[in-house]
Each structure stands twice: as C-alpha cells, then as structure tokens.
Length: 79
Image 1: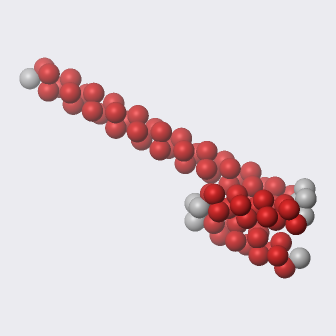
Image 2 (image 1 turned 90 degrees about the vertical axis):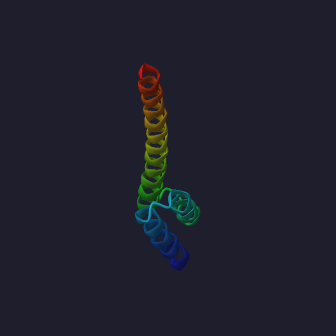
C-alpha cells in the first residue's frame, strides 16, 4: 500500500510539474501494484494527454517559426 501511495504522489507531482514521462512511469508503477486502479488509470491518461499536447505545442511553434521565416524572406525579396 505504501509503495502505491508513493507512486501516485510522485506521479501527481510530476504531472503538475509537466514532467510527463516521469508521471507516466509513476502511473505505470501504481498500476503494476494495483491493476485497473481508477486513480492510477486517470493519472496515466492525464499524463499521456499532457505529453501529446506538449508535443503539439512544440510542432505548432516550429511551424510558426518556419512561416515567419518565409514571410521575412518574401518581404526581403520584394525590397
């Protein structure tokens, strides 16, 4: 029981700190100790969603950077 509580606490803290890989690992540890536990399953789901969302934000930022570069190149070409 103590190991489960530690894993949940560690995972929740990691999720709150946007350390998604760490949160996923902790949730998986909690699930290893208590299969199908709803708290651990929610933690795992939330951590995976956060990880996916963070990845999308990075991709969007890269697209914007690339777009801004194209705009600048176009403006330079027109002057």
